[in-house]
Length: 567
Ligand SMILES: O=c1ccn([C@@H]2O[C@H](COP(=O)(O)OP(=O)(O)O[C@H]3O[C@H](CO)[C@@H](O)[C@H](O)[C@H]3O)[C@@H](O)[C@H]2O)c(=O)[nH]1
Ligand SMILES: [Mn+2]
Image (tube, rainbow, N blue to C red; front, top):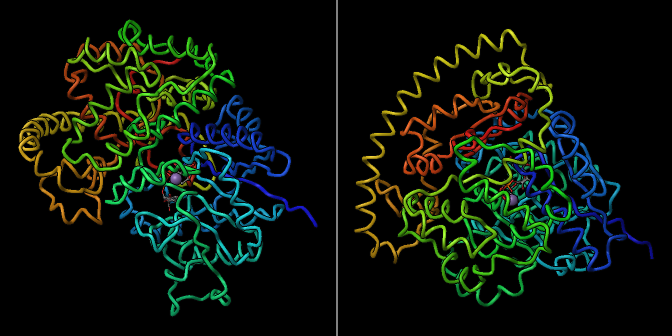
């Protein structure tokens, strides 16, 4: 009997998913060791070439290389731009423009050095060794088959965040041709892969593939890819029943556990694993170069960093024990439609900023400072900026760093390029002027919005008891009272940032003067405004996002991350 070459693979094409990629790699190694399958099953990371070579720091590259046995650098698909263009309409419905590039998952079929591959999104977390049973369950899998669990959004389709596949060059070619010829249902990989492998999604008339009838989706148990959040009406009792059998959890949607936008039993488990990874890989020492602005230094986040350091010195345990599975079943499964988004974010921020780790100090702190929720800092952001992103080029010229990208999706060059310095400065001034006048407009708008929100809040309170009975699709939709709730069952109400003009900004070293000004300017530091800013999560772009593919990737960060200076 010949032994099969098996692999578990994941994908990374932008640095903001690094925390997921690190945590997954760490967890995979831990579980493979526990199952004594380190030698039998390889791990590999598919990473885009420009990201690996030009964007990531040496430290990040080394870290990834130590976590994954193979680092496979991939190129965008040929015709990437036209593919993105043709899928734009459907992707807009999904409201996840950053996923346009996820079609590159079709390159998984090129990994013919392996006989079978288990693909996992970077936002997945295997919970125990049982997920490895997939290899024995599908030991007879053929190249025509794809193993995956149903998607909760449309259960006749599979979710493409966990897939068992048999790499095959012919399939890879056919699939990549299919991507060019067809429009994906969701504008990204999940749609197209379903259209290719899943008979429910095939269009016999338009289907130009010769042997498409042989292709087959093998429906796997949902326990192998339990997606969260899940607001399905069956979720609470099902979670109670099936919860202990879950093998892998998948944090779908825009809010990822490392972004801190939501919190439940599983995001806490993810956070514990992330901390465990950091503790074991000495990431905290790298973080010590972070310098906060004077104002912030005296306040909570700095203490939080110190607390983090102390935390890593002792063995990591599951510290966030106050969020238990039962709580998840009772509170998190059901959409808390009675809480307005604003209140929700405020709550989340208070919880997150106080500390994910220190549950004791959490209650104290929220009691002490109920009026002033501390600034929420996405932990990972500090790492991207200080540790994981190659900042060398930028540091040469501070002015250059202040250059703002001319237009969203502008300058779509096929190669990663650095902006010409002089041009950049001219553009910078021009953009700065535009930005200033837009900021003024935005301030006025914000004031109006504030008034509206106050009104909304009152109405939300009145509606509270009625809404408790109703199931609403997504948190974002719960505040938009103008929308007909019945319409939201399928189509999510656009969050503020989608409607808003796209903001384009480059990451720059925080200018101490700016920080002072912004500290003085009360309009920006009002807790209410901060909370509002976080709700809106505008889309920022980094200087290095000038390559062709990265120009399509939208960013969502809270405004206040730019208040931190970095040495
Ligand atoms: O900016 C990004 C976005 C995605 N990814 C990678 O691509 C994967 C897919 O993106 P993700 O945010 O995980 O998508 P989901 O929220 O899980 O959305 C669903 O829809 C996507 C588009 O069809 C599918 O790729 C997912 O598997 C499916 O679960 C991630 O896990 C990463 O591995 C990046 O590296 N950078
Ligand atoms: Mn995912």
